[in-house]
Length: 387
Image 1 (cartoon, one colour):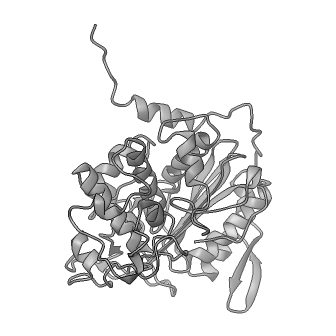
Image 2 (cartoon, rainbow, N blue to C red):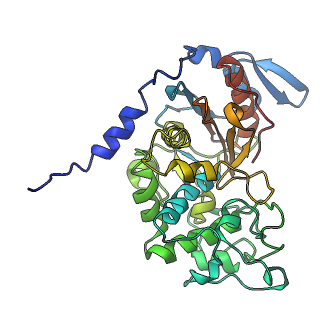
Image 3 (cartoon, rainbow, N blue to C red):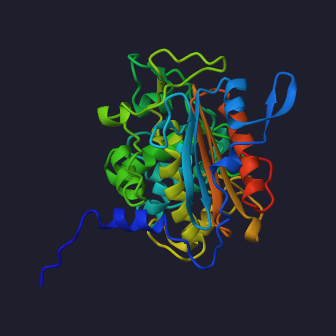
């Protein structure tokens, strides 16, 4: 008997699941209006209370888009400010790392990668240069994803539209036209936390070498597609259809970036374009897996491992984590030139939020919105927001 398969079925299931409210959770029934008032923002003259519209003006943030997770569904998604809708696409910046980590862990589950193997055993397109720091402890995927791999290069500046774009090997070697330093071992792997976008570029090379596929294809097949993230892409440049709906990046003074944004070929570290709704869909799946309710992306055991601090640092595998039990929280900040964002998830209570902005001042607004949501939706205790 021939079994007919519908290619849209996984997407339909994911989208339907994002709207179902399980009996185990009670919605707070707080609407957008509750988030739009009484924000505590930090400005030049000190802290002040402001409406969301006032905060946008005071902080020179052209637009902000948010998605609230409550009772294990997207309670609402809304955008505010200049020409923005809930479907407007923003640079996710370092939120890309969390998404990339999910792809890497899917490869671990299938045996294509190993968390604790020397990455040089699997790398074929490039190798981590050995030095005095890695003689007894080797660089591993666990270390890369948890920021404890002993790798340097915290972040990347991107490239103006039209400028020469480096290959991944040129980024890793720090050779022209790359505008960043070479990615090297700067501390004994596993010994301490060092925030490292460079480490995620090694992970990107590792994923490509393990599968023989481009990173954009890997991420579409393993994460974006199964999660129903239809408005998201790691493509550089974006397709014309998505590019037409992007928010232009802005500096701290409110001026639009030359060429509207910078191009980030450092995909795993900073290259994702997305919407809060799409990222909220992903967080819903992670929360459900953590509670043992879903295996659409990863097994419960794998997700619980991702949400456990590694090697004594503040990171799990892909994002910062804090607390335990009902107060366990996953946190990730994103900061590219002209864009800042934040995601947060309490997997036990199925609550959280994604905030995306097109401004270098966006983190100030994101933190104010998260604090307001925590109060309105009665989240567990909110720890200091981590990167």
